[in-house]
Length: 286
Image 1 (cartoon, rainbow, N blue to C red):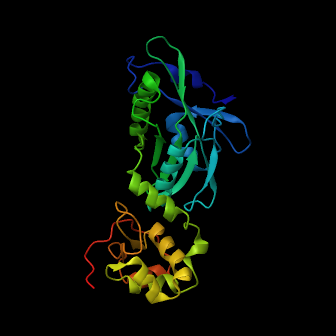
Image 2 (cartoon, one colour):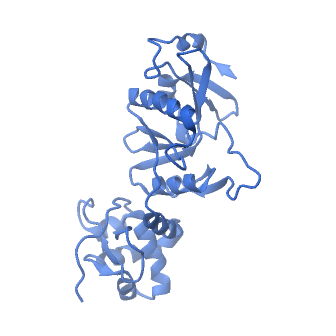
Image 3 (spheres, one colour):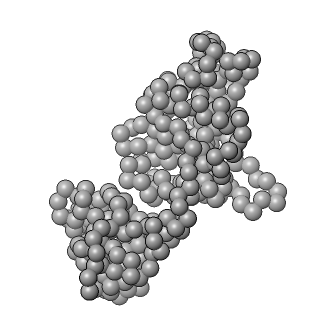
């Protein structure tokens, strides 16, 4: 492991409290060598979203779920996950218009226990980079009590370290079951190949300029079997919106999201914009 000269001085505890402890970060560089830097220095110089996992996800005999890969529409690359809960959170972050980068287990944060001086560490499960340059470190616990006391103490340290640099650390709660089910369906159409031929997305924006049943609008554009994948892709991207709190079916009301377009929805979609994830408002009258 390569260490910065004099890094040991970072371990001196100021005040003996878990909040505000000096923290270092270990990560695997492009050369495959593990490097350790002070947290504040790493935040400003390391692209966490480009790092390989610093620790592998375990494969447990008899467990129904093992590690897998999520293809990210945000980055065009695969991100590893270790559980169904983590995959759901990856899916949710991948759809966020403010997210520009994603990675799994990119760093290990390290600090000394103020009580007995032991070196402690924690590897957050996810990292997300936002459009403003800030970052999110997150864990995806199956329950609020998962990990026990060790997880709770690590949470205090990570929250303080992230807050100090303008980032955030969160334990992500699973979305409601219906929302998760709808997102899983739409995620199946997240790849750009589902957006259809040139002009189709703009045509959908015009047809769904006002709230309209999904199947009815798709049929108005063309052959439903050819148009529906583009509708679902547009719903994933936020070009079209609908309520995800209710089952996604042929009568679900869909509309174009013009709120953030700054102009014609059709013009924005023709340019390949990717903004807006809001629910469709208004009522359709036959």
